[in-house]
Amino acid sequence: MNVILAKPRGFCAGVKRAITIVRQALDRYGPPVYVLHEIVHNTRVICDLAKKGAVFVEELETIPEGSVVIFSAHGVSRAVEERAGELGLRTIDATCPLVSKVHRRAVRLNKMGCDVLVIGHLGHPEVEGTCGRATGAVHVVSSIEEVARVQVKDSARVGYVTQTTLSLDDTGALLAAIRQRFPAISEPERTDICYATTNRQNAVRELSGMVDLLLVVGSKNSSNSNRLREVAEHRGVVAYLIDQADEIDPDWLAGVRNIGLTAGASAPEKLVTEVVDWLRDHGATMVREMAGEDENVIFAVADMPSA
Image 1: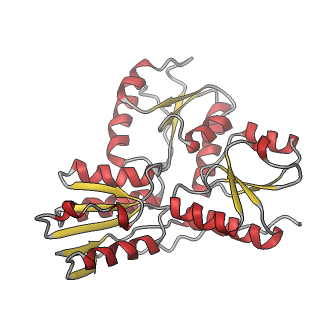
Image 2 (image 1 turned 135 degrees about the vertical axis):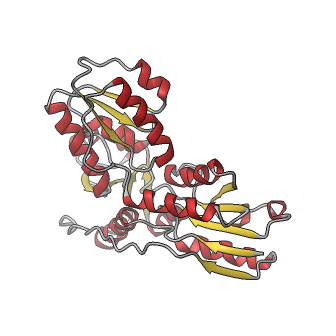
């Protein structure tokens, strides 16, 4: 049994930056440091940071006055920022710079008098943050049927932004429907889907032609990890999303000669190593990495506010 590792895989620059911000905040201020929602969607990362003193909360009101609170990589609405100020909290923004770029575009479109279509999953933190940054009409669409039903003020004044972790395949179909209904749609110069999402999906597309089974390391609530599984499935490859090695069912390996292994953008490489070790213990004789793109993107971390 052979194992082929996807390249690239695992942490992206935005995730690395967000985790670094939490660690630096713990070093500067000491625990506890509060984080609104999960800093990134990965169970192991959250557990590791919690052991160091990070406290993950869903409501700002549960945080003691004067405490440090970090906004997650997915971004937050303007109302959340304002509420944190009202509660006397010291805020640090770990929003991914690529998500912040989407926020700015949504605001520009509204200022131009456009209704904004947010292509994404209703209820996802990134989508909620983007909608909460808009200053005018905004509509979330995640299916062709929703595109057909959406009501705008002026069909000639519509623009769109995209959740950064979507599937390129699914987004293509949605965009075709949007362009058909709104021929004058204002489009970004480049897709809002981030470089890391694109690179990992492209790697899985290529890997799908080499393997009988794909394992995707990532948490169940990770949008980009779920999309990697779907990319393989759309190409006829059986794929499973696993948080860690002990979730693998040995029965999955029956009759399998080549296993593909990748990781979502919020999954640490340590988890991939653990899966490789598990596969070696269960009959894998060769492990190699596919040829792929090197990622050299780095997002700077701003200086922490004074204690």
